[in-house]
Image (cartoon, rainbow over all chains, first blue to last red; front, side, top):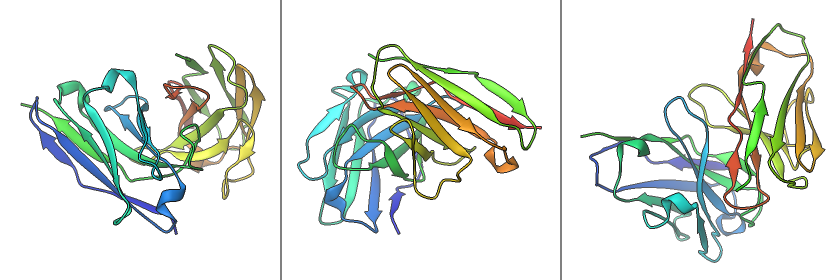
Length: 121
Length: 107
């Protein structure tokens, strides 16, 4: 069955970086895109960006440009999201999600369990 | 940037009721509108894709309709397990985004 398993919770200081992993199984990794979505405590969902797992092409939300990077390791079927220069308002649960196809314009049919990133001095 | 406005923000309903949640887009998005259910401390789950296509395994009481700027999620004969927050999401253009969410409480 399709599974996306994310890395564990992180606590970081302001200005630090965090890398969250998302290991996929149960399907052909390169046949579907992966998006990252975050949710601040008690708030709604925010799309961060998308990576074409086949080509490595990315598309990031403008307000995170320069601080976020999304990469993949096809040898381990793992997607990564790195966020740099962390601020307190980056405290959130971060989700990876598989698109229903390779397109970046697709809905997401499977989600990771979420990774809580806490930014605090 | 496309803005999605959901209504109502909250509703408290009794089991077996039928409810609707609406999502209005600030500009036409065709059928590129999808609905998710999120329960506390869980990941979102896809219910409806492309406005009206039910996702595999989703109970038939969930249905979607609409196109252009106005969309509706209908839950027929509500069950206790349907207590959740529901989000619409547009994939017509970047930045992809979500409505603010509609919380459904079961009395």
